[in-house]
Length: 308
Picture 1 (spheres, helix red, strand yellow):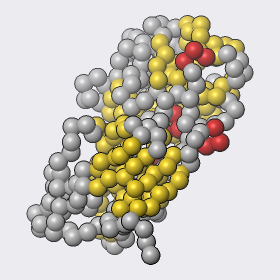
Picture 2 (cartoon, helix red, strand yellow):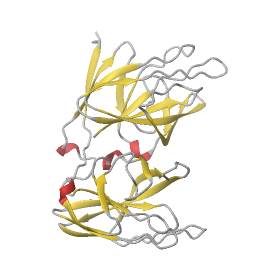
Picture 3 (cartoon, helix red, strand yellow):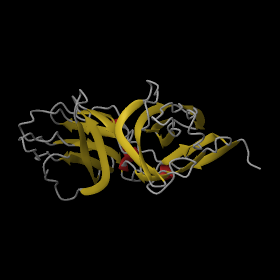
Picture 4 (cartoon, one colour):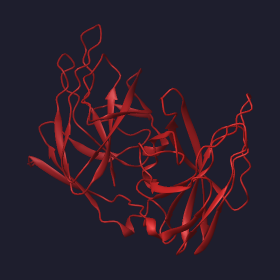
């Protein structure tokens, strides 16, 4: 007999490197901050809209944008113990990357201050011992001659790469409604979009492998219901909203540039992804009120959950 509420334990990473571990910063208007969606991509401008969960909440070091007609300079800082440095390289032109840096599959998305341009970084990584970390300049430029923005650095401990849950307390996702057939599964291409027969086709690389919480499809002639679940620690929730009609999204949810694609049978569909930070406790997921011309409502919103 199924209990009314089911609790699932999920191991989720937390990549944290204290800001005081970074010192002697040397570069144009150089500044350190906490890597997060909404944070500045350069020290003085732009805004991060999609950050890989593995890099969230780590220390980020960046310099000012500078003159786009000039090659973006490098900078340096010191770490007081061994660190893994993640290098954010603007995807503009062909920037020279010194040997020793390894390209990863991760991407960072960001926008200009007015939101008019959507831009991306490719992420590289390298191990450094305690001491000076030298960040290279960016010499790539576009067809109009504009150079890429300066590289940025995200600093994490070298004693466990991001994604290693051994140093993090597990995240408990619970209070899942049995009447809505709620469940938690891995978010990955080929997996399920929610507790129905809906297959995920394409997902943002930043969210690959995280945990997704969803409920049953329900009656397509009725608005998808609101629902809730609980978490044992602070999280960032990425809500997948079916692109059908014009659903009402509470203002507390921030629209990102990320999309997910999925299919039901031969039909192809997309989600727009919103984000919101929550403290430990109850996560309230809004319903989906969007409807198409045939009177079919969107499927219920699903949530990808990342520990902070």
